[in-house]
Length: 336
Image (cartoon, rainbow, N blue to C red; front, side):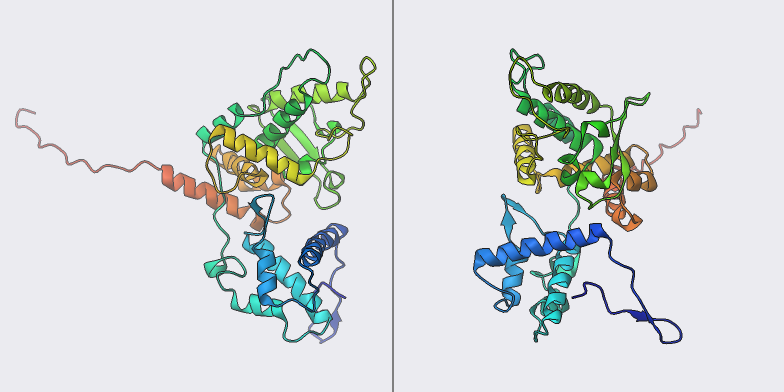
């Protein structure tokens, strides 16, 4: 079954073969349909049992206390993928097609089919978040005392300070952290290997306010990778590993983030890594960065992926723009 549209034709009417899907794109499709398949199994349903209401329930579901599919783009991608499976099975009527066609307030993205505005922290909320990071002694009595809290502290600081996605953070190695620049910024080299082949190579920038926390952890992580006084080490080179050296689960990262938002007293709609990434991107624009530089830092392939951050920045500028008061000039005295 093809996940692409039918081949287009050239000026002479000859079919034009579409470009091959990249491995990263295939991996995303497999991940998406895997999620859908697990949900169907949990509901004791098959593709032939589903109707439009069932698909809508899948899109509106929640996982780990968070709404997973609120964005218009992701919801449409799921609907398009499911629709093509039904077309391949020659099922008619196609329940996914009905949702794509009507685009009602429960289907693609809410009324109007528009993406919701991005949740972005204010500078005061950013400071509160940093102040609320998990705390642990920097000089523990024993080598492993409090290491999880220090790992989480650095991981969350990385997400706010560099705007990394959760999939990038949990796949980072100590070797991805480069030497700090003169202004205190730390380059983070991201490759497709860090994201399981779902992202492109790019350089993120960990800003100065969050760099010390991360760099302290990098030193400790390297130390903990070697046996200390007969204690078991944390194997591997993952920067933010689980106790056995394997990658953390995304849901674990979300819980750590959510807990820090709660400690900081920050009340926003979304308390996961996406809000931290949004905040980093908009902060870069607030401080004079260009849309092109933000695009490169976030690893976007196309500028259209960056534009929602530009729009969020522009909204913030409009809200913070001082209102000019029209003052009636006082009459000029004859003595003047």
